[in-house]
Image (cartoon, rainbow, N blue to C red; front, side):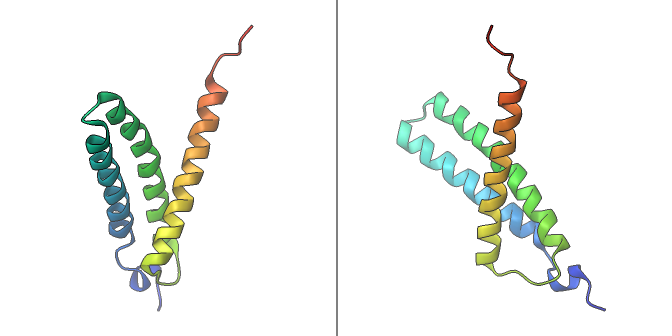
Length: 101
């Protein structure tokens, strides 16, 4: 029997690794590029939410997959998940704003 867990044993760890690597990389870059400005830390925090949601979606997608993914497969799917998560968050934010009179 070929279950998805036997084909792809640790999908959430790979997705978590990609998410944390990108978040820490952005945090370190923003710290050194701006000299520790708090505005840059806030921006990284907002982007980190999109990355986290994308990583969670990627972990679920990878767990449900019936074939083993290469790292390149994880990376392009991760980028796709982050873009889609960013679009959803933007749409929800814009739709929730009150209209100007």
